[in-house]
Image 1: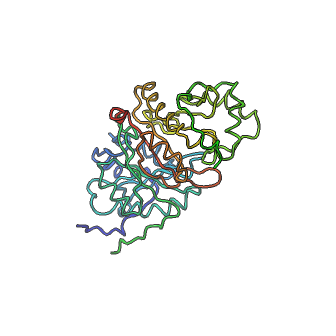
Image 2 (image 1 turned 60 degrees about the vertical axis):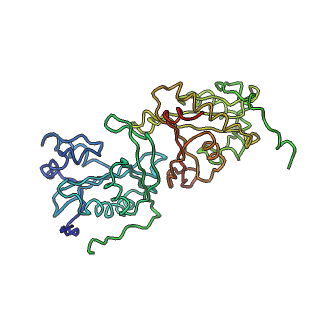
Image 3 (image 1 turned 90 degrees about the horizontal axis):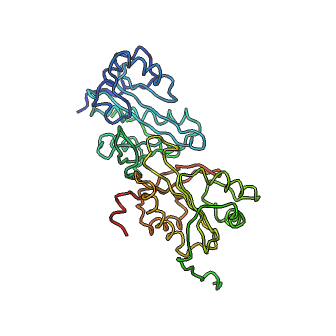
Length: 180
Length: 184
């Protein structure tokens, strides 16, 4: 199915000049429905979000296709005694779904994150039980599914179950097999 | 086997009440015992001042807490903490913690107490959806308490916590308000 050359996928920090590409996916309800993000409603909102959230973020990268932003990967470390763990999140523009891009981006991010966050031992991800595509991304990227946490969190006004996954600093880092 | 290890406790003699300053000597029995905080973040106490500080300043910081008493003498402590303290998206969840003097282990006391507190939690906090507990993967005794008290074992969170110099795998358990309708 995939005609896309995954070697064209890269990760880099966000820039203000990404705003128009950013709005294409961050302004799409389909993309943000599984994120805690509010859908961006205007170019001004998108600019403010990149400037005030994405750029100062502890670890957020734009997923780029030929250096144009088509999504993001974010890692948010906990603080204090809990800085041994961090939460990973990601999204890709709807037009690019089903081509292995999120999987490739997460596989690229994992070794970088453990290199950049010195106290990190555990990278964890929480998905909704219905979001099978996202669970497949994590499994293919080498995360271990640990369990279903019932009525775990408030998400956009409702209490939801979460499936929890983890990748440890001691787990084998994913290989990049995008040439296959 | 020593005779006094076989002494069972009449569970009718077990009660819960707020911890008081007059409990400090009893509190020092379990807080100075190395076996007790083995899987806790804290080290055994070395001075009575720590016991007094806990009763006066720390016990009240919990959402809810009680001394576990045998004939009104404190032999342990049980508490609840709101999960929203560490994660603002988790306001309908509460975490349970408990500790018991080692002399009283393996007598069914902790299971009995947790069963009571499980019901108290959903009664005291009517909007509560989820009561959870995290137990060190090596702490089999405590895992059995939660299983016998009707908690669901959801999984093992690998290297979830780091304390006393090492990463800990934590088993996560939960009971939901909706579970209670189907239990005793």
